[in-house]
Length: 258
Image (cartoon, rainbow, N blue to C red; front, side, top):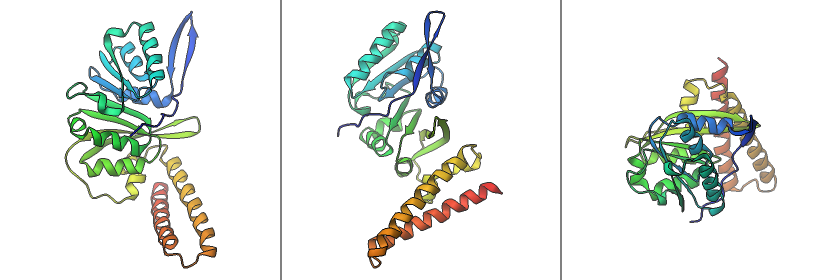
């Protein structure tokens, strides 16, 4: 299966005293912060390598594997690595997903900027390897609920959840470990994780409002379709599912106001 292109990362350079310094976006800064000190890291779908480069420059880690399915971004990462003098601390690999990794080559991995279903597929292909990792740091761009459900079904536990705002978009970031146990989870909590509710994440209201708007829009479209297809069982079933989800989202939203 071919990987789809990642969303472009947000990064810019600031010119200071003739030396260009990388300024990471809020999303990338958070991912950098979640990597534990001293680990061997693999950044899967590294794009231009901004995250591992920052970690190596700061001394937080000593070695990183950078992989990407596309040659162009990987070559750009190579140029920046050479410019920064980090050649001996990196291994750049051209290939698909986690297929480039062997057992025990990395303690932690990052998969950021891909869709949730694609991330699930990558993990599934190297499931035993992923079970042995200290931690996975995952940042899906969409289908976050599908990824959470997959992880639970495969015995992974989402140790912590984070929301990060960048420009006009909310990003969802997960710290994942393998525990081997599956939980009985109401599907609504794949959409709105309990951890975000428990810690009263300041951006949770924004996420809820976004989900409520999206589901109201779906409901409006279903109602329009039902005008001419009032007895369509598939549409009626779909409407009931969306109404149930919308009710649960509103209940969570009201609970935050108490």
